[in-house]
Image (cartoon, rainbow, N blue to C red; front, side, top):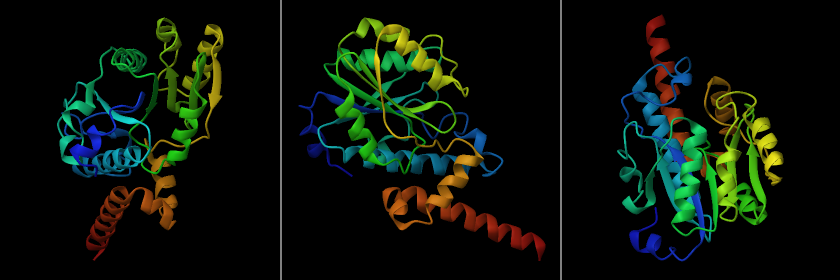
Length: 250
């Protein structure tokens, strides 16, 4: 974890790396689509907390950027301080749907003086940070960087502050939460005359399929090293589940 002194020493950067997140302690437990694989709400909260912690630590390692965590109204900012996120690194999401919330975060960060903003999700604990660096290098005036995800959406989007007035149109007409979200965003970008720069595909751990991929990836030591908290929690959850099944059959 970076100390407060280290965090403050980086405030001269004009590149924001923002994680779209929610509190692990909201009224509704996160990752409801994992309920068929992880039965208890407590374990899903533990897993999501681990996702966040690993993602925050990884993002802090991207030189020349300033971390921001944008949180949903549900649960507020509870739980973020425990994983080392400072008050000044938090900002609230606002808007009626995902597109409106993403648009508002870009507007708020550009208004705060950032020239480039890279936005990623919070369910990518093993995401290689070189993909983020690639996106930062690619976005220039008149471009949008996108990281397509396996479910038809995108896990990363990056923009520059130039042409801020057009941003709202990039997020309209998109089927959020559907397999067409990435394609719809490409259509919007083309309509606006924006050049699209792609970074490699990655996957969200948002359902059982993603969880299986993650557990398979953790068979590799390097993946465990990229996301140590997630690897530890995954191991604990499934070790406990195996022990419970054995107990019931005895």
